Length: 532
Image (cartoon, rainbow, N blue to C red; front, side):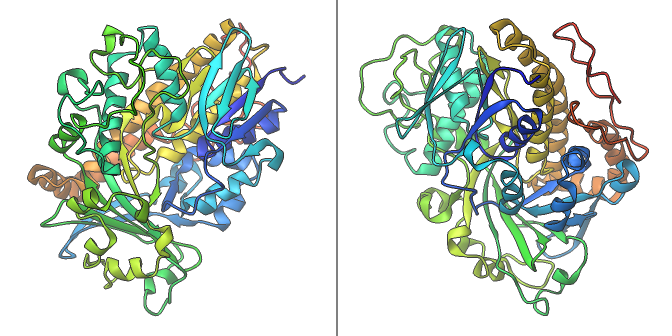
C-alpha cells in the first residue's frame, strides 16, 4: 500500500529528477517544480562513476545513458607548454565495480532523466518565492502567484538553493542556525554581488547588509569561476581525437596565469570544454564587505546573536524580503563583463589558450553557439543544517561540490535521492515526529559520505588547477609516483558506496570492491533495509 502523503520537490536537476523517478516507481504522490522554462542547454560535461550505475541498471536507464555517453578511462594533465604532468587513471573501475565511468553533456543526460517523469507532474517556469509549514502540511508559493500543498518539501534546487535560503531564514529566526551555515550564505551574497557587478555599491558597512562571517574567515572549500560550453559537431579530420572510442580528457595548467582549462570528447563529434579560475580569499573578503543592500523597506527585526551581524536572513516573515542573486549557470552575455574581465574569463580572453589537440581554445569557442557559452561561480561547502520541520535538502543544496574537481556533484545528488527515496518508501505517515526521524537518518547516512567525497575533491582540485609553487611541486610528484596507490585507497572508500532502491529488485554486487550492504534504517523499529 502506497504511503498517503505528497512530496513537493524544488529543482529539476539530477537529485530532484532522480527522486521524482524513484517516487514514481514507489507509487508515492509528488510534484516537481523547476524555475527555468525547460532543461537548460547551458553547462558542459557530467561524469557519472560506478557509484550510481547499479541504480541506473535498476531503473532500466543504464543502456540509455551509455548510448549518449562515452566511457572515460584516463584524464591527462599537461602544462601550458604541453609538457606532460601525468594522468589520473580510471581504467580499473570495471575490474573494481563491474562498471566504467561515463561522460555525457549535462543537457542530454538531464533530458533523459526528465523524460522518465510524467509531464503532468513536472512544472517548469515555477520559481518558488516562499513556503510555510505547520504540523500538518507545507505550502509553497511561486512567482506566478500559484500555490501548491504537500506534506514534505525537498530542496533539490542546486548550489545556491532558494529553498535553503528560505529555510535558513526560518531557522535563523529561531536563533538556531549554526554559525558556519550563516557564514557560508554570507559569502554567497558577496560572491553574487561580484558576479552581478554590484559589489561596488556602497562600501564596507554600507546599510544593514554588512557581513561579519566567522570573524572574517571564508567558508570551507575552494571557490571557482568557470566559463563552459559544448561545441557543435566538429570535423574529425580537424579534431582527430573525436574518432577515439573513449572520451579524451585533457586538463592544461596555466604557466603564467591563474587559469586551468580542460575538455572531454562526447558522442556526436562534440567537445565539452571549460576554463576555471580560482577566486582568492582576499578578493572574496573585499566583495563580502561590499555586498548589495536590499531594496528600501521597513527595518527587520533583530538578527539572532548566534549569527553575529549577518542579516541576509532577517526575522521578518514577509515573502518579499531580500533574496540572494542566482548563481547557477548563466549565459555569458547576462553576466557583468567588468568583473569577469578582471579574472580574464570572458571568451575573448581565453582564445589563445593552447590545447594538446594542436588547436586553441578559441577554435572550440568559435564552434560553440554563443548563447550556449555559460559562466558560473561555484564553491565547495558542507552545510550543517540539512533539514528542519517538513523541509529537507539534498544534493548541492546541502553539500555543494566544485564542478571542476572530481565531477562528483551529480553522482552525489543521485545517491542522496536514493537514500531519501528508500526512507520515504518506508514512511508510514508524515507526522512531524516521523519526518524528524527520517530526515535525521538521511543526514546521518549521507553526511559522512559527502564529507569523504569533498575531502577527496579538495585534493583533486589542487592537482587539477592549483597554481601555487607548492601545489605545482606536489602535483608533479603525486601524479607521477603515488597517484595509483592513493587512488586505490580512495576507490575502496568511495566506490563501495553504491546505494540502490530497496523497493526494486536489487542488482548484485560486482567487482572486487564490494558494494556496501544496503543501509539498515531502523527509524520505525524495522530492519527492512538490511539487504545486500
